[in-house]
Length: 317
Ligand SMILES: [Zn+2]
Image (tube, rainbow, N blue to C red; front, side):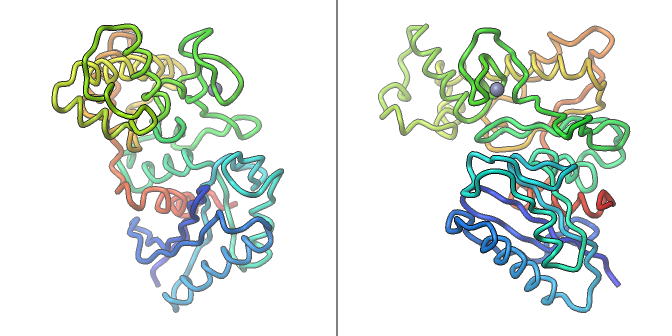
């Protein structure tokens, strides 16, 4: 009988649930609106019902467990701790609550770690024992695989490259400190790069004629593709910062590759700029040995498949 796993991607707006095969194919998926729930018990009831419906749809089948990727999720405790973008405040004992409702193991991790499991089991990280997964989106997340395992550290919070300080005294980050990578390479960070460069240089760009609040990364990417000098400068600045931070990260775990995921990573021309800065900043002994490339996971299902991969990788213990 084929072995399946349930993957759950909890986001501030929606929660996506999928049933995933042992080869990483998402067979079917459903969605519940996270935002419509303010009482955690009601939300967990809806989530467990959604999972049961998918499992029943594929009976008879063997479902090994439920993997969940969520913001501020903690692998060791199975909790979500004070997630600012979720409607549930405080510490949520998600693993315990869900296991009480389902007769199968549940494992919880943060979204970037789930992406790293996906890359490890189904993506470009197959056969690799050491790589770094970097996810660019609303924030910057990372999952670090070392010796074939996702690194959690002594208290479960390892792999926060988004909050590595790249500019001491730089922009104020949501974490309360200054100069974190996230403030320069997340979607909002890239837009801040745009306004900072525009204030420093003498650019004429269609982006400067737009309503400031309407400008997004897709517009910057399109402008860069058309040769706009300001947009190209933004791409260069973003690539410089990412390359610098990733070169520093290499010195810690000596990975074989770095995978990039998320919309901002696809900014036109960004990957070559990251590679240039990365190689420039690498210690000589690593030069030419570490590939920086895009994730091989299908972006539409990556979060679900990554969460399910955690179960299939037998982390459910
Ligand atoms: Zn920070």
